[in-house]
Image 1 (cartoon, rainbow, N blue to C red):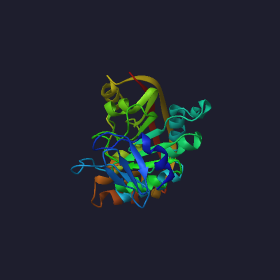
Image 2 (cartoon, one colour; image 1 turned 30 degrees about the vertical axis):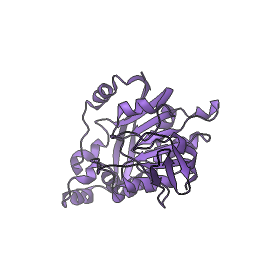
Image 3 (cartoon, helix red, strand yellow; image 1 turned 135 degrees about the vertical axis):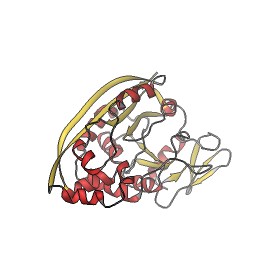
Image 4 (tube, rainbow, N blue to C red; image 1 turned 90 degrees about the vertical axis):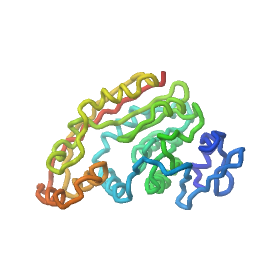
Length: 284
């Protein structure tokens, strides 16, 4: 069993009955006898019932994202996330785990755990390829396959921080699992994010009212704390541009040769704007 899973097992909730889970050999089990095997790749699946309607990342999308993130292009965003989460968490000693919902590659959770060496993390994603990747993202990160829209498989008030970076959110569930004094950090793109590429490559556009809609969706569960705008230029090669297009929702669009032709028409290096908002909220 992955050591990180064993460390957080008691904080996980059985998706069948809600009871606490405990580590046993190569599985997690609850007091009612429900059992969930640990995959050989190191993650546990807590998906139950009929197939989820959520569309998860494909292996190709995750490969593209890992390559782009690994090149350091989103490092300023990762630093802002660490600041919003609270890089000094360890000053008060070990804290309740930090959860990233829609963790993907585990890039942001890894940055947080590197900054907080006494903390533990839980990466939650609905896609098996992401769960496999997150299981090896960081030695203190446990990987859980789950659909956040059905409910987070976590006991009530057991985690200190929840992060959703470029990922869907379930405000009611996040509010339920956060301990008193906890914090919810959300990273969302602005309408200017990757703006130089959107029109030329037929990428998915960002609603200019996205921040307002986010605030409205969290109302009743959270009140705003801090909000930081992160905007900077990136110099991207054609390969970098192909990765940034292939790692997000735009990967599902423009399947014909038009995008390939547009990529070929780009200069060898293109200056592209990264523009996001990193906002922190507290449960009401």
